[in-house]
Amino acid sequence: MVTPDDKDWTWVLERACPECGFDTSTVDVARIGAMVREYACHVRDVLRIYLERLDLMLTEDGPHYPNWDQDTTAVDDRYDIADPAIVAAELTRSAADLAARFDAVRPGQYGRTGFRSDGASFTIDTFARYFIHDPVHHLWDVRQR
Image (cartoon, rainbow, N blue to C red; front, top):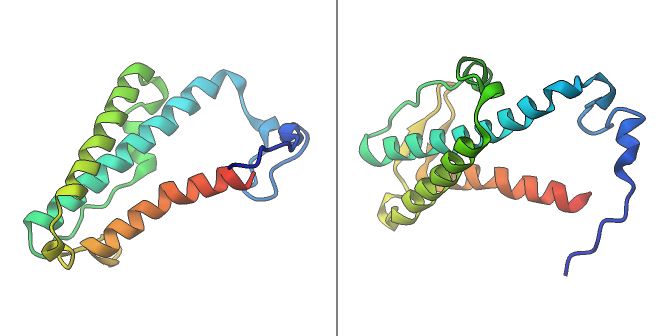
C-alpha cells in the first residue's frame, strides 16, 4: 500500500527547490506547453537511442555508439512545437519496441559489448541495468515526495 502524500507542495511557488534548484518564479507560463512537449519528446528519444544501441550490440562486434547530444536534438527537432498526440503514439511505440527487443535477447548474448563515445563500456547485461535505473529512479523520486 502506498502512503498518501499529504505534503503541501505549493511551497515551490515561494522559493527554489533545494534539491534541483528549479525556481518556478523564473518560468514563462506561456512556455509550459512547450516544456511538457519537450519532456515527452526526450523520453521518446531516450527509448529510441537505447533501441539503436541495443541493436548495434546485437548485430556488431564491439560497436562504438554515435554521440547523442540531447540538447541539440531538442532544438533541431523542434520539441517545443511537437504535436502531443503524435509524440504520445511515438513514445508508446518506442517503449514497446525497446521492451520487445530486450525480451528477445538470449542469455548467451548478455556478454556482447558496446562503447559510448566517452569511452564507457557496456555489456548487454550492464547496458540493460544502466538503462532500467533511470525509470526506476524517477519512480522512487515520485514516491519520496
